[in-house]
Length: 199
Image (tube, rainbow, N blue to C red; front, side):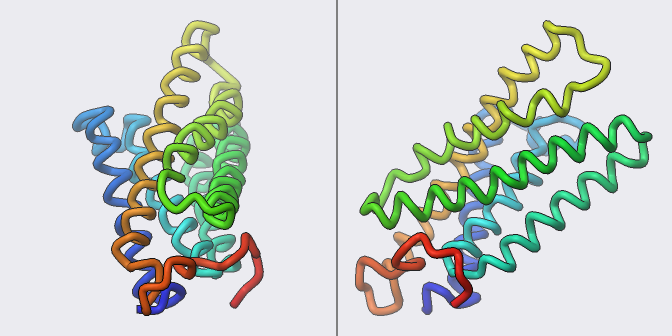
């Protein structure tokens, strides 16, 4: 299987998504399956992150950007049904999360190019928690007390770690199962350098 082919992309994305959902279930129990609960982001944001990581690893940066744009547009469109304030808050939050997905994918590439063959997920979790930390104020622009905002911040930090670690672990497990390449050589699962160009 080619490390840049559709099969490898699907394997990475599926493994990342499944591990992200499992990590979410372990952290938040059945709430991860409740659309009204923030833990549901393990399915939504986690799924988008898994696909972005899989595409970037295959050198399909334009497609990864398209996924990020689609994620942003979908979130804003859904929030707009509640009025302009939720739409503005969601636009700011989604922009931060979307940019964070690309940053995390780039960090994964840099870590792999630097020779870290396994364990990158341990860095992706805190990195994505930092993204959630930066995005939280946008989601609490109106109607949240200081104590409520602090609780949201703590929860989002945990959520970012769970999503980042879970998805990152899944992608790494998929790459290990793929044998690093179709011929078993250890250095060619993704791009050989953190290049953001199309193949």
